[in-house]
Image (cartoon, rainbow, N blue to C red; front, top):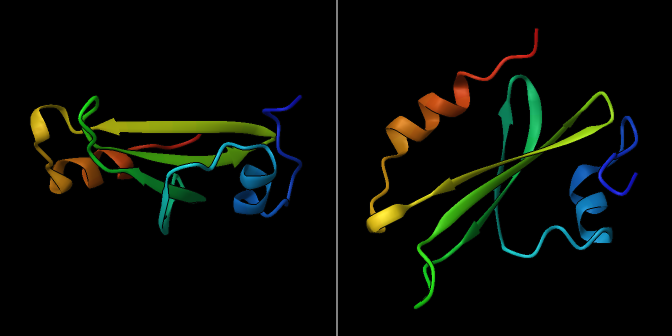
Length: 88
């Protein structure tokens, strides 16, 4: 149940209350027509940078992670990937 946000909840606030929003907050976006909370973890000595997208639909929490392996970022590709999601 701790990963099932209620319908209509303020997702960003819910993520904070459940200690799931630890990285740097970026502007929100939409994935499959649903509001997505975007966070970023900048590179560290132990890890490449990555971006996370949290969104909820029908009481289920989804998280997408885009890792920037080799310190390479291709936002044209990432945005195309994010735009490809749909719910049937």
